[in-house]
Amino acid sequence: MNILITGANRGLGYHLAKVGLERGHFIFASVRASTPQAIQQLEQLKNDFPQNIEIIELDVSCEESVKRAAQIVAENEQHLDSIINNAGILLERDKQIEELNIDEVTRSLDINTIGPIRVIKHFLALLEKGKKQSIINISSEAGSLTNAYSGDFPYGLSKAALNMLSEKLHVALKDKDIHVYSIHPGWMKTDMGGNKAPTEPSDTAKGIFEIIERKLEIQSQYVFIDYKGQPMTI
Ligand code: NDP
Image (cartoon, rainbow, N blue to C red; front, side, top):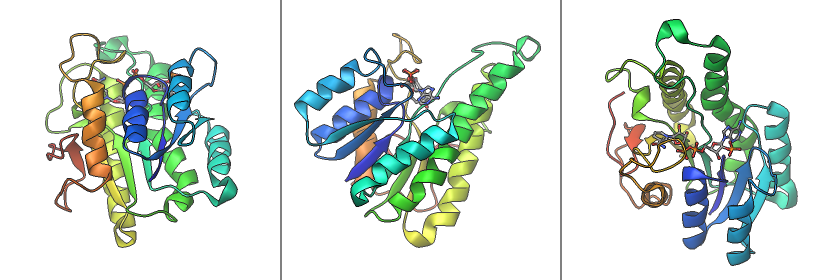
């Protein structure tokens, strides 16, 4: 399968790229900025799997950048089988509403919610040429409306809205047999999740590939699920 991953240089995105390559897929590993430091780990993957990975620049906050990346993938009549919207930020962590920097609230929505919209807008045509297609939006339990908690205001908002995007796409793309999921990846050991997190991002990545490869049976009404395929509370 041909798979696009956003934010593939570190954290879950990197592990998705690595696990995908180990399972024989072709990975378009996209990164916000392809500086030598940012893509160091991906270059190592390219040494190990030279035929199966292309590193491309894609800043989800910039439509021009997303459009350019889609043109690169489209060259040589390429297609996609899965889009993984993984890139995300957690700003204004633990702040109360009176303390919020509104620009940071806007930036959170721009990257976590509008970012996936930009990506799907420009890559959907390539996905429609694929097989067993899926769109995976990496969400969070922080986006659950019924389990809302105080704090992380912009992050929670951005992921709840991302869940709505997934629900709407699920309806819009059902007839084309494109599976759309919002996936809670667990509390993971990454820069965002910190050292105390109980979940290894490599385990999350393996679970997500079981879903992409359609090895896990998920009832058709569920869109918001965890990385083991279990339904989450909207
Ligand atoms: P990290 O902070 O470790 O990595 C975030 C990734 O997103 C980086 O590759 C970063 O690139 C990229 N990114 C940020 N902004 C942009 C942008 N404008 N364009 C392209 N890429 C960008 O996060 P995690 O790996 O932990 O998180 C991955 C996903 O999982 C996120 O969507 C997050 O919300 C979600 N999640 C994480 C949890 C956890 O416990 N860690 C829990 C629940 C959900 P760069 O290096 O260039 O900044």
